[in-house]
Amino acid sequence: MKHLLGIDELSKDDIEHYLDRAAYYHRALMEGKWDHGKLGAKLIMHLFFEHSTRTLTSFEIAAKRLGADVVNWNPESSSLAKGENFTDTIDTLSSMKPDAIVLRHADYGAPKFVAARSGCSVINGGDSWREHPTQALLDALTMKQHFGKLEGLNVTIVGDIAHSRVASSNMQLLHKVGAKVRVVAPKVLMPESLPFKEIEAFEDLAEGINGADVVMTLRLQKERMDTALISTDAEYFNRYGLTLNMLNHHAPNAVVMDPGPLVRGVQMEDALTEDPERSLIHKQVANGIPTRMAVLDMLVGD
Ligand code: CP
Image 1 (cartoon, rainbow, N blue to C red):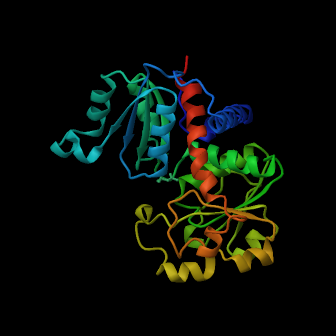
Image 2: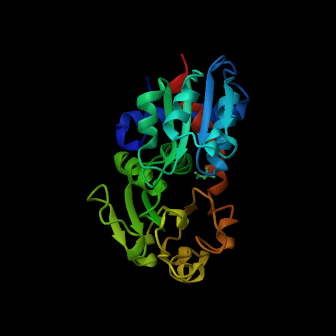
Image 3: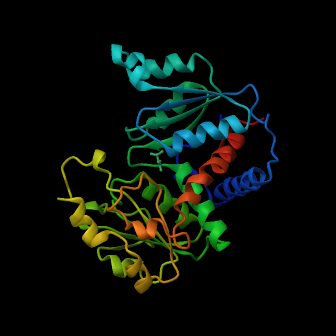
């Protein structure tokens, strides 16, 4: 049984295989030529215990583009409300014999738990602050399309590094493919340790983005903070909000990325979000579809 639980489990070769297949599906979608029946008769269940716009929707589109049947299970209208527990819910849904489960859950390691008992492929659609592997793959596809390579790229990730599964998966992936990674955050949003000694940490935004090729911003993950670590969004924006002026000064050739959801007035100024030359945000969203087609094909396809 093949799963995608985290980038931490993948080798550089595995990552490159996923990215090559995602690039293939990107081209195929542009040309309108792909095997629409690739996943015919396969059943994909989406179990999203946390809210999502991009991940859930693009997984559904990806599965449908490949001919799979899709069930979007909704926790709010499920028998969880009648007292059924998580394990029994997973066992119940697994009895219906899906070929794959895409799971988003607030608990660290929930996808691993489901993989061990569901009897089908499990794809992690984001668990706690641990991993969001398909987001890191689509981010890497977007960078590779823009720069033609990943190795040697200078990528700075700015924001709530401590609570972000996107930061975690991106640090894993970018380091494995040979990019140079820096992270920028106030002390309260920086983890106690980083996964690789080569990743440099900065508290000062200007220093951290200096000479970057890519600056990726992250939202404040308030739902994963036990207490309010930042007093106001405005205070955060004053120190860490990215502006066109700052980028022109310190990283004049950099593009900006953000996995979303983008909270206006917090991560970056609107002029940058909307700048078609500097912002790859809409390309990231669009790349969710070929990337997730690649993942479904490689894990569930015959
Ligand atoms: N980037 C991301 O995971 O967005 P959603 O929460 O909208 O899926």
